[in-house]
Structures are given as C-alpha cells and as structure tokens.
Image (cartoon, rainbow, N blue to C red; front, side, top):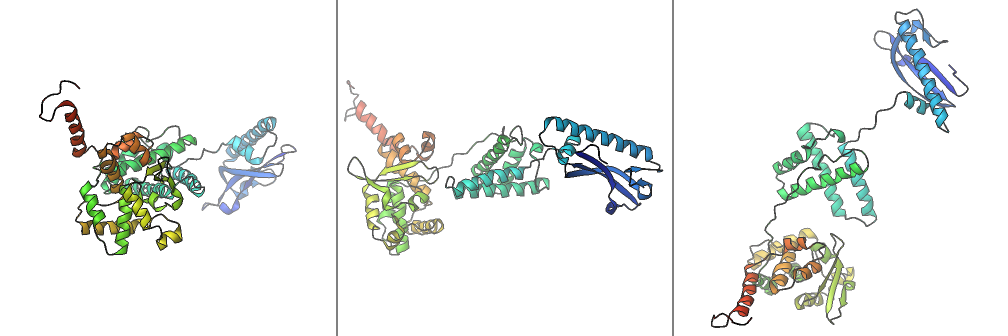
Length: 414
C-alpha cells in the first residue's frame, strides 16, 4: 500500500512458512525510493481469511486483533519515516525498520577481543613493528583460554559483558592445574588483561573484568657460572666441530651478555672501534629493540677472530656460526656432561654469568651493566645480578683495608 510518493508499506503472507495447522505468518515489507526491508509481524492466519487486495484479514476469529495490529504498525512506520525524513538527507527502508524496531547491539565476545588484538599485532609483525615470537605467545594464550572455557564452562565463547571478576583467578588456577609454572601462568593472565584492555579501548565493554586481579611473580634462582666453571668449559678440548662451535658461542655470550637471538643476528657490521681505540659490538636487543653496546673483552674478541673465515659465517654474513635454538640447547647439554658441569647451560645462564661473575663481582657498576644488557629499567638488571659471597668478601676486604692495619689494629686516621 502506497503511503506517499516515497514510502510504501505492504502486509503479505509468507506462504512457504505454513505451519502444521495450516496457518501462514504475516510479514510486512517497507519500500522507500526503491530500497526494501521488512520483518515478521509475529501474527499468523489461514489463507482463506486473508484479503490480498487490502492486505488485511476478513471474517476470521482474530480479525479485530490482526487488523488493529496492522493499522497501528502502519501508522508507526509512517511516523518513523517522517521523523527520519525531517533529519536525514537520504532515507532507506532499513533506516525506517531500525527506527521502528531497533536492533539489539552486537554482543561482543572474548574470542572477538582476541581476534581484534591478535589481528592488529599480526599486522604490526608484517610491518616489522612486532616480533613473531610475541604473536605466537598471544596465539597460544587464545588456545589456552578456549580450552579453559570448554573445560570450565562447557562453552566455546563468552560474552564480554558476562565475564565476572573471578575469570582471571579461575583461569590462573586452571593453568596451574595443567602443570604450568606459577610465573608462566601469571604472565598468561597478565596478557589476558592486556587483550581485554584493548576491548575496553574499542568501547566493547566499559571496564576490564581482569582489572582487579593482582599480579605477583616468584623470583626464581637465576643460575650462573663461577669463574672456575667458565674456565673448565673454555679450556675443554672438544674434537667434534659442532660442539666446539656451540661452546665458543656460549663463552662469547658469557663475556658479552647477549641473548641467543641477538647473537644469532650479529654481523661484521655490528663491530666498531670505540673512542678508546678498542673493538666494541653493538646490536639492538631482539626482544625489546633496546641498544646493547659492549666493549669486547679479549676472549670474546678471540672467538670472533676464530670464525672470521668460517664458511657459514662468510656465506651468511654472520659474526658467529650459531645453530638453531633447539640444536644449540641440545649441544650445550652434551658440553655440560663432557665438562662435568651440573648446572643447566643456556644463553640465559650465559647472560646471568655476564651480569654476575664477569661484571658485578669485578665491581662494574650496576648502571653500566644495565646499559650493556640493554635494560630500560634498573630493576630488571637487579633480577639478573646476584650479590654473591665472593662479591661480599671483596667488598668487606676493601672495608677492612680502610679501617684496619695489617696487624688488625684500628686505624686512627681514615
């Protein structure tokens, strides 16, 4: 039925939806300047009681109810059109429909939040503004959360608005029960909070459900090598080339503090002569992008010289012949066994050794150590650097020399 030159409203029977009792649902079709939309009225009628010409019911028990609904709906739709026509440049049938019966807002879910967050980070990785390893960690978290949802709640997803404050502690407990260490589990929970913060900034939720969860970490014992252990590894004759190369790379890390990925990516271009006339090495840390610039001690310099003409290094423009991370760690285990070292050898062990045995025990200021390790925060360096008994002994010896004479008598003048 044409209401005006722009708007038409038609009530019609959708005959392919006839129910078992023979009744057919009544639909309404809105047409505005060639655009169409519509909806089901929720009313049903036998076809014999429907007047196709008038678009109304006739001679049926529910005639009054149905026709009253049609009249009121038609008037309401016309009113919606008039309101839109007064404020909008263009009016469509869908706009009239949505004005009459607004659609419920889209209910965003936790998996939607992961899709948003991880897709954006993946795009950054493509532009070299993010690390592939970090993206993989986000994707692992998404899988762990999906597993938790199914095991805990028997669902595949959950509405963001429906998430309770207990979600984060429950997820943390779930990971602990899945034999994930406390610090790793805490890191996953913290990353989940980050994903949800992105949903908050997008306006999908008003507050972060994990916002009140308290994050705490258990500071693990950082393993490092003593001087005699470094010497034992460095002096060990290894007749197998692959072990010899891995040992040299490990010792290089002990004397520079470089992590595996940073060492792997070193080239001849990373070497330079400092103001002191000695050779230095510099590289932005792979994990944080922070510069790590270190003066090369004789052992590290000798290792670089040893591999200057190594076929792999020449062909790939590498400073050292660094294996894949998996092989590197596997070969280090062999080396530890051959050298009688019971401590676990990793690049982390080498990094801690540099921070503790090589530098701090020899009175290099912690601020200098932080700079060489590429740390933005001194607190991070304090995690790596351990105050050893040897360091305490050295400091107390200096104090004793200042306060006492060789015979043990107290100095009268300081």
